[in-house]
Amino acid sequence: MAAARTDWSPASWREFPAGQQPDWPDAGALDQALKQISALPPLVFAGEARSLQHELGRVASGNAFLLQAGDCAESFEDFSADLIREKLRVILQMAVVLTYSAGVPIVKVGRIAGQFAKPRSSPTEKVGEADIPSFRGYIVNDPTTTEAARQPDPQRLVQAYHQSASTLNLLRAFTKGGFADLSRVHAWTQEFVSSSPEGQRYQSLANEIDRALAFMRACGVDTESNPNLSEVDVFTSHEALILGYEEALTRVDTLTGAWVDCSAHMLWIGERTRELAGAHIEFLRGVANPVGCKLGPTSTVEETLEICEALNPSRIPGKLTLITRMGADAIEEVLPPLLRAVRESGHPVVWACDPMHGNTFTAPSGRKTRHFDDVVREIGGFVRTHRAEGTWPGGLHVELTGEDVTECLGGGDQLADADLDHRYETVCDPRLNARQSVDLAFHVAELLRDFT
Ligand code: TRP
Ligand code: MN
Image (cartoon, rainbow, N blue to C red; front, side, top):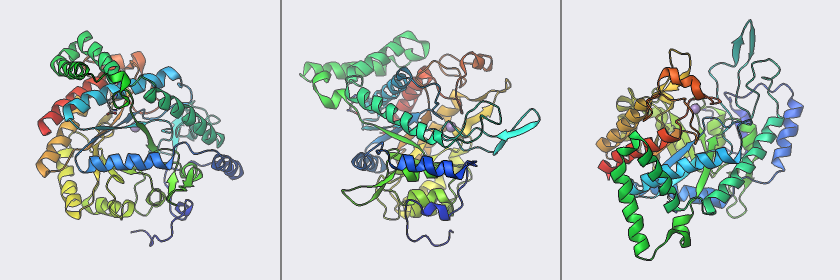
């Protein structure tokens, strides 16, 4: 275990080994950028993070379901109101289908408005004869394959802040301004169902939702005049990777006196930075936000319990989400002992399934991809394992976009390796496109229906 952790402060992570941090070439420039960010307003507010934690507490007890979705990595270049709106549209469509079939509220959290930084397997990349720094996300450097473009630039931290602010501004407007109206969102889904072969299969479920809406209208409840039916809360989240940036946005909540990381409502620790003795756990153990931690196929019972103790010693429901990314082949073997141990320990965690990261491979074309069927298979294994252990399969964590990209194989359009080149646009990992995402929601709906 780590040297005894005692006093926490927003800067105490600096005393611990921090993996995956960029090699900033100019310490003075970095300091200056972080000072600049420290003086800027918070992106989210403490009360919002508290209400997300409260909702996640309902997920932990089996009375709600978490949908966490968005880009693998946001881009400084592909950034527009249209892209954000389309991404939100898909998340809402998935949420309607899941709300109806699970019969519980869906807690909606975007990988958005701050999801910029990427951990890398190697600090450098070979380009021709030269070793240049790896691309670590737009918050650090530029993807162009030249030495100069790959130099970490601290002003990008400031740009990431501003892009997050304008993304959040749009999200707040769209979620409260009529765009999220239940009937409207469902009408888009009906379009999907009637216009596509994969959709046909879902006709009856979609019709049931239609009838439910018609029933409510007949009873005098129309969606436009009822904020419960026309507005949603969509929270923000990202991997808390670049700790200087997170520290600069960590502020005292004047109401409770607690430290809150105001860069997003929820932060998570990735598969590559969850060392118990490391800086990422040190940082996130001290903030009042709900936090997540990825667990991979090598996660052990001991490690998982220590993570629970480190990140949620007071055992607050909704505080900790464990996001499993085991791979479709491994999940049913690796997950059961973890579920049992956490249940027996009494830790009130949210269990979420990331069916993307354990199923990534390089196709013969050389493209990094994932197969839709593996994604569905891992979720199937996740749900089955929870059913067998008597625990609640509390959530889904996926990488998607609202665009018609060709990055993942399979799905209703039966995308093949040869199709990937057509529209492969991701900055990092392959994402489900809009149709694959809605399709996935219907699959999960079928799995959850058997559950509840
Ligand atoms: N406000 C409710 C919710 O967030 C119902 C709702 C309104 C809704 N619009 C929605 C649900 C769009 C999902 C998607 O659950
Ligand atoms: Mn990813």
